[in-house]
Image 1 (cartoon, rainbow, N blue to C red):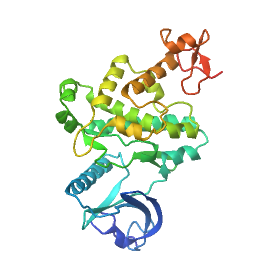
Image 2: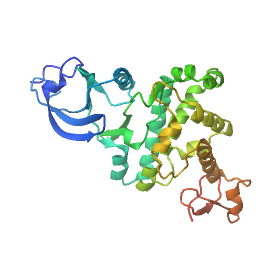
Image 3: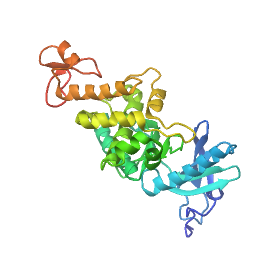
Image 4: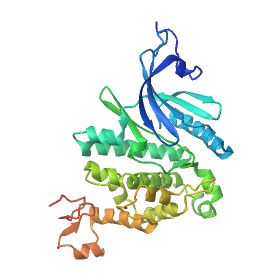
Length: 323
């Protein structure tokens, strides 16, 4: 028993496992939990997640997207950005199935179960920042990033966080964006820090896309709020240009404003680039104060308005405590 490695990327993982439960079913994919039941497998008893396309590919553009997604998913797995992929099976109709590490849940689940949410939040931010920076360094830019598309697994008291869902409709290579957008080609190809700026965009998209859930979870401040509060005005301006211009016409528009509006039917922050930039400036005013700010003029002397709770706080060099 347990003498053969079955999850070697070559075997049919459906033939060595049985379904335990259905986890999620969307419009394009379904995810289910399986258990390795073949006794001569080294992985006997291991639970894995299998994600499968629901319908065959009909259009050539969809076929290309599925093949691209398979490549991206493999690359993200190898880079330890997404959960480890043990194998990929392609069946007629370009139906792909991915056998992956079974995770404990998404970040909404993690915060719901956590007693010390703010402590967990700081650790989550630290990990996500590294993941987004790693993606940018690999030359990949994605916009469908949110709490539900980040998953976690806790083993021996240590929690690992990974990203999921690299559908090509919402992911693209940075070089493709630069080549197809003359403004970006001119303004950013020569910049040594363009990868960091792209990472900043993904962090900010995550902030916006997660705001509704952040409020519902009772977290005090936006994700990466301190990071953006400390950002220089030069970087804020560069972020604004990227928010406006980071898109490509590859069949569908990869546009951050579109995806952020999608997650804000009743927007907390706004719907335009200027709204998002003003939101960052609010973060800066809240953290450091600004006597020239219209908000500052309306506040009692020595205090500043918390833009998230609408309560006055003491003006300090750091975020003030609520009164």
